[in-house]
Image 1: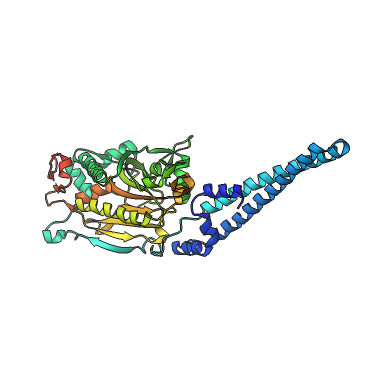
Image 2: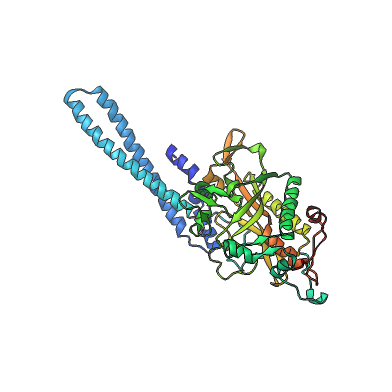
Length: 439
């Protein structure tokens, strides 16, 4: 392949172009598994062929132009004038072909970005409801057997002086809240417990920015999902509020070559997260399950491609370890291909039982994104005398609001008090029970 084509491949980012060229049927099968059209594959292949042809034509004409330049230098008189006229014509043609090559490059990059990551063979086919339950941990409480009707987290939060939804709406609008008193204590305790676990597991702790440049948001693939409709953009600036610290952490090593011997690099990042919740009209309008802002501790890993599946299992194990510390009943589900984000080849969710809803709700998720993000963000690894693509993986250690919902509803008692899980008590000043406050 010509040099210009090699450079385009290294920057075009998302799926590996070699997979598209050498195994197009594999990419088509992945699209079918996601329930998406395979037309994007054909368009990308056509764009690739057009790009390669444009590069070849441009370089041939430029070589001809250089050859004429040597002839002109050796010519004289009328011959030189005739050659100069031809060089002038060639120069115009080269300029046109260079512009055509640039247009073809843009079309190729755009076509490639339209293709989501190639899903893992192990991922279930289908859509949102086609997940596979891998494991159930713990047994949901039988409140009827205990002789009382469980209160939801909204009522418990009000009784405990922990959640103030009314003033959240007054100050910021719907889907906002204040955590007050023991609610604020719970958040800080959850963050500290999560960070302690991550530190003990060898993670580097990070406080990440919640505002990022457009290249970071685009590099992770979030602007390609629904046109970025769930993302807050700062008006008049190329700056975005992140919906997860996965975004700044994926860009943390952008345009860098990492020493392969230093992998895996594991980070535990705290940040506020902001989401428009576009398309969620009428869903979870009550309480703090689906909100526009929440705080989160996110695990993020840079790994070799070969080690990525094992790192994915480790992330899931760390998530389960944390939920066990919160003494929750939960299940682990393997998300179906049609419900995966564009970056992920496979994703596991841990869903905790929410008593008043009578169902499991997502508390954490972990995704293997292989080299989908690092290609666009230009992050590679150096292995001996070669450089190669590397993988990124992410996993929620704790998303604060949903963790608080699960704790309050799971550990409530008949009088409205809430038992504090033993692992959280040292971070709550030794508090064992959250007691209702006098109004």
